[in-house]
Image (tube, rainbow, N blue to C red; front, side, top):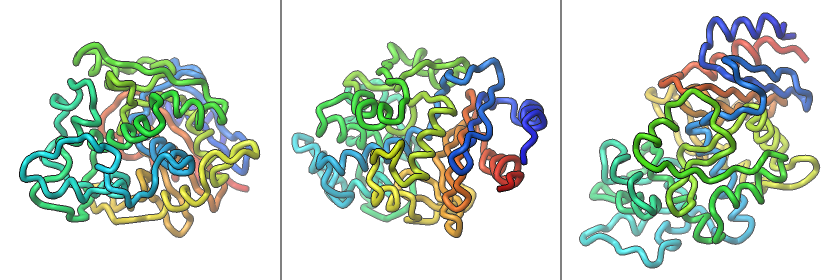
Length: 328
């Protein structure tokens, strides 16, 4: 078994930006520890862990009939959108392209300064969807482009993203409600993104109340572990169905191989597939924020960390220092 004192000291010495670790094994809490002055209920900006939460919300919206199918065309949900002259690709883009990071875009690097200064980021992101290359099926990881997904949820539910999540996901998991946070200027946006202090119960959003789909959600490791446990239990929490089992199975099945740049991992619907033989998968965000789920070992690990760019070893840390040292 893991020696909790040794584990705490190892993290302090070797993983300096970790704030919290929560581990559940076979329904039992094994670790719930903190570092760097954080308390258990403090939250961090989970970065791209947000993407996997949005995947859950898409599944919930689909179950409610707000979204028809992953094969629906994106523009079906934006009937008033004016297609740019000469554009022939955006019309063919589907929700599945967004969910699997195979949507085509008209930029080489993400246009933060052109999207994040707009009132409606969904429309601003649509302006960059498509392009001359057509639908190639190429994996193209994006943070801003998938804002279209939360825009669709907001448009069909007529609810702010945070409110939809509070009612249908966070509330049933006994996670405190998230509030909308809109940065007043670029400086505040940067401070939110790179700040190391606890964030509060917020979801970074555009001026329309649409939560950023690729980043921006603030959670504690304990809250992330509840989400992981929900996934481990195939969408059920405390005997209540929250996410459709079929959606979870589909979302966490590998759709494509992502190559060496992404450590040869595979990708589902906004979830990283870690080991197909064990069925393990994860939500992974910059700074080493992770929700790791291993159904075969009935294991959930959640790690939160303050901003530290390009932390790529967190799955190795989980496998080596937690999963690898556990005994039944």
